[in-house]
Amino acid sequence: MNKNIYAPNLAAVKKVRDEAEGIKTFTLEFEDREIKESFDYHSGQFVELSIFGVGEAPVSITSSPVNKGYLELSVAAVGKVTQALHLKKEGDVVGIRGPYGNGFPLAEVKGKNILFVGGGIGLAPLRSLINQMFAQRDDFAKISILYGARTLQLLCFVDDLEKWGGAKNSEVLLSVDVPDSKWKGNVGVVGTLLPKTDIDVKNTMAFVCGPPIMIHFIILDLLKMQFGGEQIITTMERRMECGLGKCGHCNIGGKYVCLDGPVFSYRQLRELGENI
Amino acid sequence: MKILDKAKLSQFLEGLKPKYEVIAPLHEGKDILFGRLDSTKLAIDFVGKTRLSPKEYLFPQREVLFTFEENKKVEIKAYLDETKRVIWGIRPCDLHGIKILNMVYFSDYIDPYYQARSTNTLLLGLNCNEAEASCFCSSLGTGPFAREGFDLLFTDLGDTFLVEIGSKAGEMLIEEANLFIEAAEKDKEKAKMLESKSKQSFANQIDIKKVEGKLPDVLDNPLWAEEADKCFLCGACNFVCPACHCFNIEDIKVGQRTERVRYWDSCQLGGFTQMAAYNSRTAQVERLRQRIYHKFSYIPDRYNGQLGCTGCGRCIDVCLGEIDIAQILRKVANE
Image (cartoon, rainbow over all chains, first blue to last red; front, side):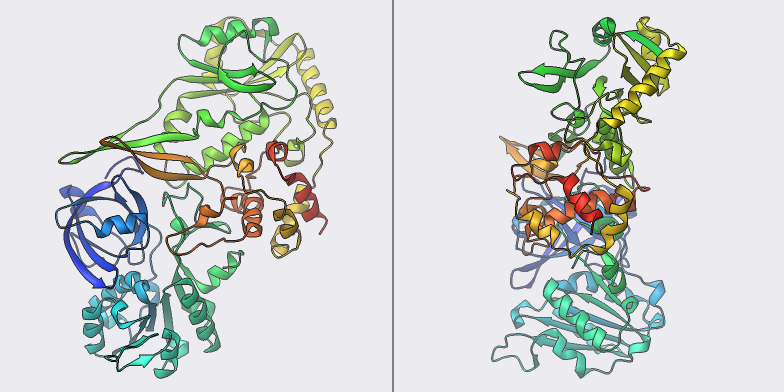
């Protein structure tokens, strides 16, 4: 690894997949063999992605730690860096430093039912954890995945959803806000799926990720269902320059989202103080 | 403790030049600013603070982290400033600012750029014998006399300086200069007298314990909106602050080459929390409140109770909207 904490490691684009409308999934491999083999991370962590000449942006890792030797990032082209990433082709080189942040609790939630609630590209960090859980499937009870997007064209990870939905003791429920003629499923925000599944609240951990407004309303729904603050886990998005607890941008309360997060329980979020 | 004739200060500092870049407060027009030593401009007898702190010598306003040459392969080249440097005339408030920078840049991950400057810089402090109107370090315990964070610490006794040694490296400077003599008991007593006299010169008083106690309960108080209404969104409060350490990183193309540059940022500007599709602090009231809470609640929480404010009052001096951090703190204390 580079000793300079700001120095990105070079990584080659190995594969580009159109994930959904405006969203692509990039498979990256470090050029340095030693880094490629030693790079390890937890689900829920993120990296700082460099497009040389354009800049850096924090991106959550969507591949799972059980997948060795490569890294997947699913990215919507919404900002300067992500738009530049979308222009990259197989063989192009980008920069990666990290992994940063705390990651999702895994050992702590063994034996429980797991409820995932994702919105749009917010499924990307959850996918990392879901695949890790499926790799050690017997450690968890029922796995429910509720996933919504604005339109059918914006649903990500369709192959994964099919695989997860077909596995035993697990279910996948989908919803779109604005349906077209092809859509036969649930219509409405992802929260409308909550009443459509049986949730044993006492023995369930909920993992929520999506746009801020979605997270806000899902948390309200879960609290109404009597989920405790410790049972709701979410991952925060904040502006970050360094990812190292120095640049100050992601500070909320006494925490830095880059160091202490991005994964927080609802109880921890409440304790941050600032209205979130 | 040592004694240096005031008349020999310039000789002492000039003597360091072969080995060090010497930075000192200089008369620049009506201002006193840190700059490369020019003995004809050296400010020795000045009241209160320099216009700006010497922060930029440890954490410059803009610095190139890397250059990228994009030919066949991306070549990353880092730039570390390892200039041997001595800064003389640092006020206790500014020494506290450096302490905050140290905590941020040496905690969790070591910042190599800051480390290169910090380990090659000797800090020569200068106690304050008199406060300016905006100063309030005495209420925060960060001044007017320093207790730590210096290699040498000077106290102006009139015709001489009393010099306290804070590190081995500081002691070496004294030994090599051969200009210092042993201090007498009366010199130390005079310094103590000057310290208590200096403390009495502060018009600006704040009950900081009370402020810290009240902060958790006043997050939604109307006082933040009253203050935020006065803000012109210029960010000057952050840019003159010796303890503010937030930065942006940006790639800037210079011909074929790209420079990855970092530069100071301000939490008072709307873009500070702007992401591609979402801004987490859209109202000025949230941003102003963040500045105060970060300094008086979040930094102390994170770094052993150390305040993120130095009490220098520069943000008060420069604010176009006359936002006065000391007044805000008094308002909080009185809630």
